[in-house]
Image 1: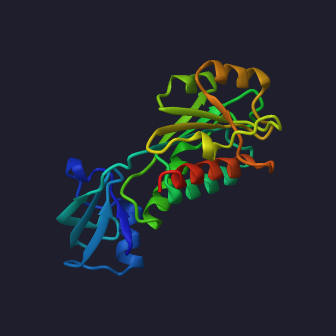
Image 2: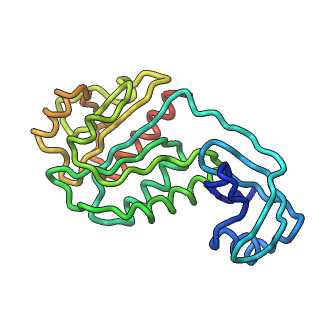
Length: 231
């Protein structure tokens, strides 16, 4: 099934944007009266009939819709972006496919990147959402400071930290059916001060295993562990 994306269907926008229209009409060669599957990224799947097969503005009418409920747990990953932007795009693509509800980018003491292209990141997330046939698009938050993360709500808050004296694994620390927030630090890891500040603000230090992982790998592993915890 090819899934198309139009976030503003609930507001009455019944046409695809230019890129989606081109893909539907020129690439897929879809014409008038043919049906397409859509999502608004807000929990709804739609079946629609094309009423105007314009490659710049493909119009449709809704035939049916189906509400997809939120999961009984939520995964929020706050990550310090790597110097290499491609690695962050890879991370966003993969965690979206696995199942993530919110992604925040944070600036830490050892961070090498201070800005993030949220528009590009969201496009990657949209593509991954469609590829994995999901109805919920993860929320993408722009860069915030490390301290600003503390004000974000969650039932369980974790900080992944490379520490030989830290035997408690995320898998055993996480409880099922909770809203999780996990912090993944930069390539130089969190500073000692940042770790202490996180612990003082209700975060639990956890391990992701014996191996030292790259930033984007650690975030991906965290996402997978939290999803598996709720099977």
